[in-house]
Image (cartoon, rainbow over all chains, first blue to last red; front, side):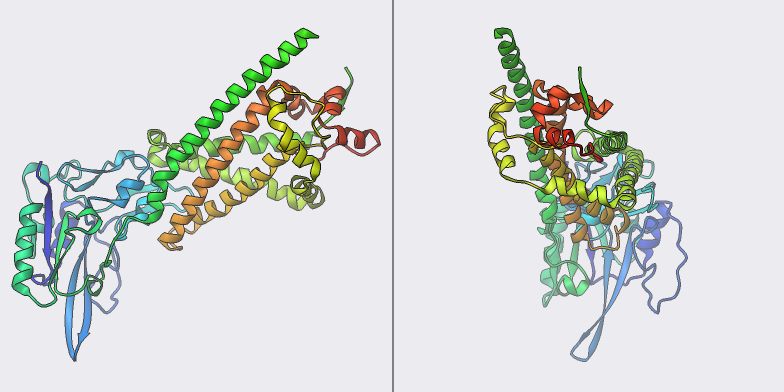
Length: 264
Length: 217
């Protein structure tokens, strides 16, 4: 199956937030009551009820002010830290490259929350018991029962975008389109997500550095997740060798002690 | 058969209390550690069990420490007091535990060197579990993701260390022919005088001279 992707062209975005609303609407996520913080940006953060959020940045540049917009949602990485650290396989790669969730398997451990280099997954659990809402994030409209992708429909955010800032299609095709667009824009324009964390399935066309848009310059799977990959087999090996050694030890000791007693 | 009291009731209850909760903690931790066991953790029920067990695991030693600081400190001192007999014991132990001669083993106190080593492992890994577990439970979201990752890593490293040593402990205490009365004395409190003399000579000499038997586990 061809890899799919969503392309977000920040230079075409007007931050109308229709995508934010469409995401909530399609995925049946309630609106959250917030207070005016002096910005159009609302709600203040991603949450179990907000999987996609537009961020607004005011960037000063030689006396001019630029208003930059960033789409904040799951990047659907090819080397996803969340998939790597999930102990139950609740987070998994679909054949088209999107990172989906099998909620039945989620244990609410929250490892994905602390390992995601983009700070995307959210949990809403009771602090004391650890029980509550299972992990949430953008599933690229692949949530069972609300699956648009497998029914040949566009992701809700893409479908609603009025300016063409969001497009959906084969990742290869979108990469070609995006590279041509970056050429056309010139200046500081760049493509983000082509190679980051193995290549993401949400691609960004930015008009400045990633950090200016609030994105990590060089996102990586945290080293601790890689150490875990080594630590687990080491743990199995150490425990296995010791268990075998102990079995051997008890058998040899019994045989020798019994033999000695018989000799007496 | 002449018997001698090795462990008072309070010490034995404490030992088994810790053992039961540690087992539950280890098992529920294993669900997240071993690939393939994850299904047992689905829904978060095992996390709740892990947390309840963690409270129970910590509560008694802490309460006991404040109720009996002198005994607790004595126990800690025992675990961390090592001398040349301990080094001699460690050198001779491999041969001894594979059925080699017994008379070359240096005389041992109430706990032999191997038992003290286990006590040290329990104390050190126990502290690592409690500290890293506290951060992961109560400070998740407050501490930085990097700090959380390090805490998880040390929790797992301690688990490998404590889990492996636990296998050694159970094998020696319950199945090894040399330690035939270790489990019996931790269950019923008593061992034969002969066993106490041969395995814990220094301790037997002391209690024969009128000192009291071991207070804590």
